[in-house]
Length: 141
Image 1 (cartoon, helix red, strand yellow):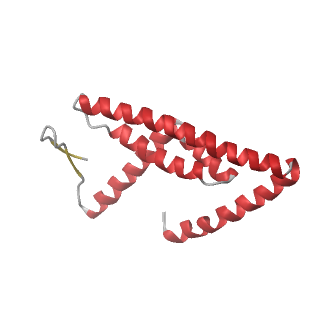
Image 2: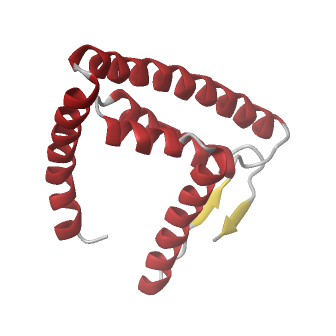
Image 3: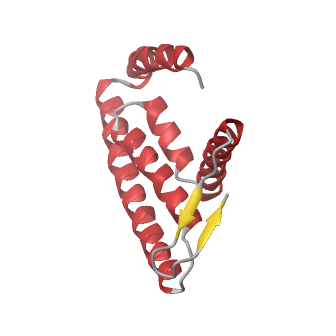
């Protein structure tokens, strides 16, 4: 995605969060709004930690079987992004973070990023080489 699309989003998200805070605060009150925000951060952090730990265990099992843990690495990378969104106070960022905690969505997003990277490398005529340091096997994507 070109930079001129990303920069306005970075500026618009905080403005949308502030507007949503004001609107929700007017609807349910300041204290419940703060409790919801803090609750979302705490719940999100706990869920991200638990899923991160599960992903780490799956990674270790794959490595012990001599497999390259591609899905686990993709899942872990998207979990890191989800944790960032969940730790950022706000309802929009929390919603994005909670959606990214759903494993099929994480894997789809990770695969999409990898596909775009491979396509970009293919357009330049370069290949991506995976090296397995344990078995000495090589493969190209």
